[in-house]
Length: 133
Image 1 (tube, rainbow, N blue to C red):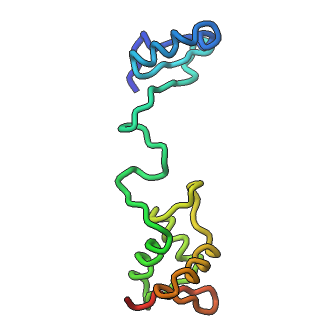
Image 2: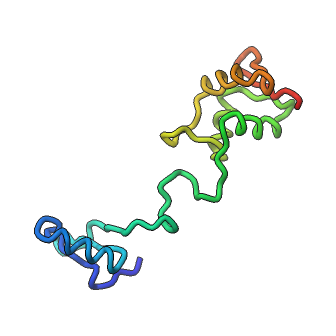
Image 3: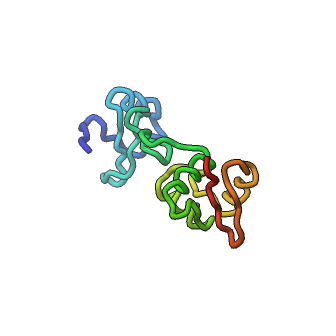
């Protein structure tokens, strides 16, 4: 990270001259706060092009859970997979994430089968089968 000398500001300036700190952020797009004369914090100007707030890179498509289940099951042997393994594969490929960024639980996948009986069949032993389309 390149740091402009004008972007170095004492941590104490947050208390004494906050407006100056943000003026420098606006001008230089970042500020490095110094604590005991050492870099301690960085304040960056928000830029949607360079800052990723989500769990994906923006290039990955996020699917609904049932779409993600279909994609993974289409590639599986006999189009069948255990619900927990299916949850792991979906998460590993980042096809679907819960709003909190975590993977779908196998119980959520099992429940989704009941909502889409035309697409999936829940087999004994928590196996999920993709029905032929």
